[in-house]
Image 1 (cartoon, rainbow, N blue to C red):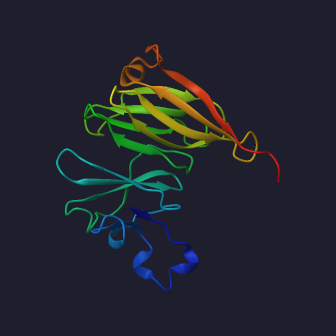
Image 2: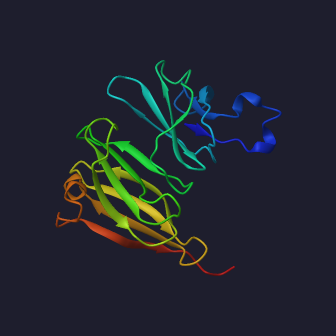
Length: 202
């Protein structure tokens, strides 16, 4: 579980000022802080963690200039000094997970200056390189991706668009083959599917 602390709170709880990791040993009844990473220019602490094939934990952190990273070799208790991944990005939330195939899926903006060109990237070498990509939505103000993979290998990514304008929640359904092809080739795949439009009242 991840945690965010607002800057105004840091004086009273200085140990909480990092990109924190919490653990529960009683099935979610209580949580305690396990450790935290100090990544330069981190923002809102919307970090995600995947386990590398060598057993290390890889924390990816939203930063003002893209995505930062830190590693833990002791199950999340201590973390390496934060560095920049070099991926760029417009200071926005990203999504990463390991797929059933063992490959890594990253959903991030393909440009570094605005929340546009939301793209799915695929890594076959545990995150060292991301040679395959599928553009999910080229429009502006698309953000906050999250997703799952079903038992048939279909990947579902949900995200929002224009939260103060169109107020849309959208869904992309695709496969690893689509990402590797750079376009939708699976007959069941769909992009930019409208799920919900929020009320424009108020």
